[in-house]
Image (cartoon, rainbow, N blue to C red; front, side, top):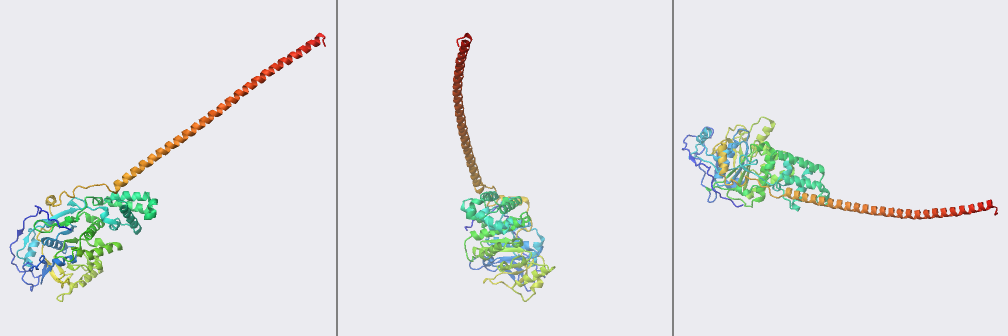
Length: 551
C-alpha cells in the first residue's frame, strides 16, 4: 500500500523543552543502574533507532524491526496500562510508524497536545534521571463510528463479510449458513450489499422467492430468515447503521505520515462504542482482517508499516465461535509479514487464548492482584511466560509492582525473548488525559482527511435494484392482471352476445311457429264455420220439406 504524506496539521504545537534533570533516581530504581540519560543507543546502519520504553537496572528498548512480532500489555485496573499505551504509541509515531488505537476511556486524546503540566510526569522524569526530555504533541486523526467525536469510520456490509456479521448478529450455526447463502446469491447476481437496508431487502427477496432458488442455493426456512431480520433490526437500533455506510474507510488513510516524517496516530473514540461490546470487538477485528487481506507481503521490514493496539482484548475472545477464533489466530500469525504489529491490552493474560498468546513476543506486565483462585492462576500463568531472571521471583514481584512499574521483556536482534526486568515506564511527552471539545474540533477541522468522510453517500445497490425489480414485477403483474381481466371480460361479453343471439333465434322460431298455428287455426275455424253453415242449411231444407209434405 502506498504511504501518503499529507501536510502536517496546524494543531500540532511546537515542542517544549524541559530543563535537564540532575536528581538521582529514586530508591525504586536499583542503585546499580547505569547512568540514566534517556538517550537510546546509536542506531544501526539502517533503520530507526531502538525505542526506550522503560528504565530499571538496564534500559529496556523495543527494537523497531521486532515490533511487528506483536505484543501484550496486561495488568489490573489502575496500574498504568493506558499510560504505557500512550507512551508506546507516541514513540512509534516518532520513528515514522502510523498507529491505530481505540480510546476506550477518552483520555488517549491528549496525545494530540504537548504535555508539561503534570506533576507526576515531572516527578517520574526526575526519578529516572531523564535529561534532554522534551514535551511535544503527536499528529493525530480522530475517528468515530458514530461520527460525533471524529471523522466517521464506515464499512460496507460486503466488506464485513458473513463470518464477522454472523458473530455481530449472534446467529446460530443454521442462521449463519443462511447468511452465507445470501452473500453468495448477492455475488452471483451482481447485487451490492453496502448498508443494512440492502441486506434486509435481499433477505426478504430470497425469503419470498425461496422455492425458485432452492435447487441451486439450498433451502431457506422462514424461521431462519425471520430470526436474521429481527437481529438486523436490533443491530440497527443500536446505532450500527451509521457504521454500515459509504464512503467506506480507505486503509491508506491509516498509513499516513506528516511533513516531518512522524506517523499519524489514528484514535478511535470508543467511549460510547464500548457500551456495545460486541460491535466494538467486531469493528476492531474487521479492521485487523482488512489490513491482513489488503496489505502486500513485506517480510521483515526495519519498522512496522502500522501498529495496531487492541484494548479490552477479552471482548474479542468472549463467546467467540470456533470458526472466528481460527480466523483471529490466522490473522495474528500471518499479519506480521504484512508489516503490521498487533498489541493486545487486557487486565488478565488468561483473557487471550494460548495459541494467540504464544505469538506475542514483546511483553509489558503491570501489577496483578491475587485475591481469587483465578487471579492466582493468572499470576502464575503470566510469570511462566517470561524468561526467568535469577535476581527475583517473577510470580512474587507481579503482585508488588507499583503504578507505572512493570515487568518487561522485549525481543532481541535475533528474535529471542529478553530476560524479564523490573522497570518503570518512560512517561509520555504529550498530555496525559482528556482534551477540550474546542481542541478536538480544531484537530478534526485541520485533519488531512477533513471533508472526505463527513457526508454519507447512498449509491445504487441491492436495495434500489431489488426495489426497481419489485416495482417492475408489480407493474408486469398488474399489466398481466389487467390483460387477463380484459380477456375475461371480452370472453364474457362474447358469451353474452352468443346467448343473446341464441335467445333471439329461439324467440324468432317461437314467433314463426305461433304465426303458422294461428293461420291453420283460422282456416279450421273458417272451414268449421262453413261446414256448420252448410250442414245447417241442409237440415233446414230437410225439415221444411217434411213439413210441406214433400216427403
